[in-house]
View (cartoon, rainbow, N blue to C red):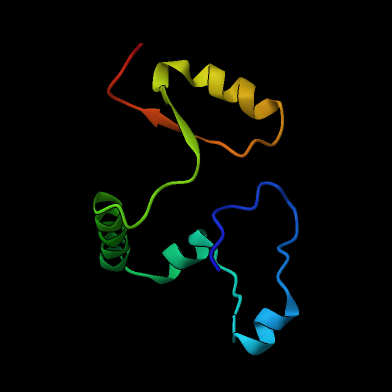
Length: 96
């Protein structure tokens, strides 16, 4: 199981039968720690692998909306309203 962020601050719920009978294992992952313990080459390989998965459609991002960077205030206003299940991705090539 991999989680992308924990902004909801809600516990992860998994049936004990999955842990026992299906040998499911859970472990924590913190990108900051991973970056501190891996070389620049390893970090670049990880990003290349993720980009390859995205380009082939084997990995898709979570629900998101895109905004031009010029509309960063809209993203901040939305973030201040509380938890949403949509990530904001900024586009740097569009100024409108």
